[in-house]
Image (cartoon, rainbow, N blue to C red; front, side, top):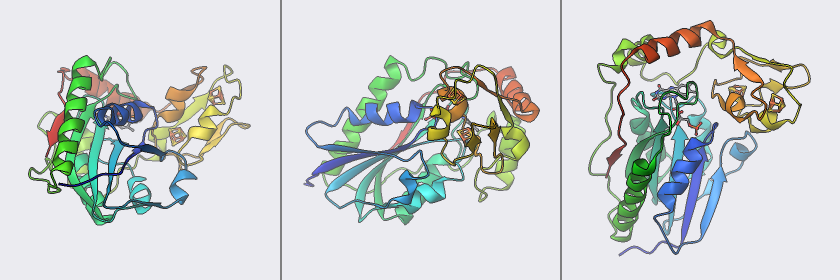
Length: 275
Ligand SMILES: Cc1cc2nc3c(=O)[nH]c(=O)nc-3n(C[C@H](O)[C@H](O)[C@H](O)COP(=O)(O)O)c2cc1C
Ligand code: SF4
Ligand code: SF4
């Protein structure tokens, strides 16, 4: 038997869905003190987070068929000591590709014992018509069941991952030219060229500063209403968090990709879990 003294929730969640999903999974684990680590801002990733063997980490990250470029920085500040780890990738009902495989590799390299992995569907942060209303009640039950089973596994002293997450994309996914590029360059981190990230801020902006405070890479100059597109990772957080809906993508390339995806028949994808 294993005794766990504390539960840690760590997440990178530009538009907020991943945070909710991590918290839903965690809600199945009762009786432990909980500490949260929101890794969105650059300041949060300058700290070091050290976890012991008698602690449990639930980590969630938004994904794009792969982890974002920032994942290296994120995992560089997380340090396990054989610490049990539950990894979560969220995706917008299109595909999660190799994101869980990458989560497993990075978490293992950072000293964690990965006991469970789950890919869960969220509303798509670029086009909310994909994964609309996800996660729903059925997803929430699956998440809680996932959390419960993972915790029981840890308490039982089994810190081995017995099933491996998938390592490629499906045929449907291969219809997408961005995926095709990623398939050819699997070791490259996910990064979009600047033209895919072009945005503008309309006169509806009230200069509340919310977008500036939540940009993971400090790429927004709100006084001049400009974006440093070389720094921007295209996470869509500023667009989704702006209370005035004042930020819009102006990227023709991104609009074309989303049109291509929306032209594919959308089927409801289900969460995938691995123990
Ligand atoms: C640039 C970008 C690329 C994305 N690529 C994919 C994708 O390839 N497949 C998919 O299903 N969802 C994709 N998504 C949707 C996100 O994975 C999904 O909305 C995610 O859960 C958002 O998490 P958050 O709300 O915590 O930011 C993408 C989102 C962004 C911003
Ligand atoms: S969040 Fe919206 S309203 Fe607030 S400063 Fe940014 S663009 Fe302006
Ligand atoms: S400027 Fe880029 S990196 Fe910053 S919040 Fe907006 S989309 Fe994300």
